[in-house]
Length: 74
Image (cartoon, rainbow, N blue to C red):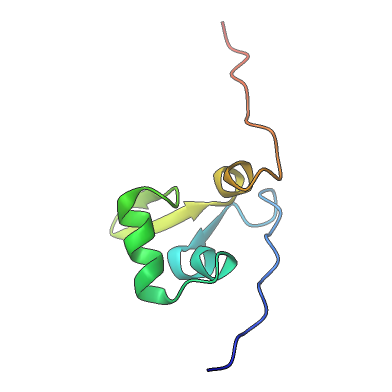
């Protein structure tokens, strides 16, 4: 089995969402395992119509790359 390099996590301003398999590859998961992790809530997702997408900003926070956004509205 050959392993592919881990893809770089995109900037949320450039690519706000990614597919579940793309996000899973960051964790070294295969397609089915990625969807299982998303179903369990281990990978954050949003649903747009029938598509299940991973918000890049939330994934970056989960990995500790960015600080959580704070709500400044009062």
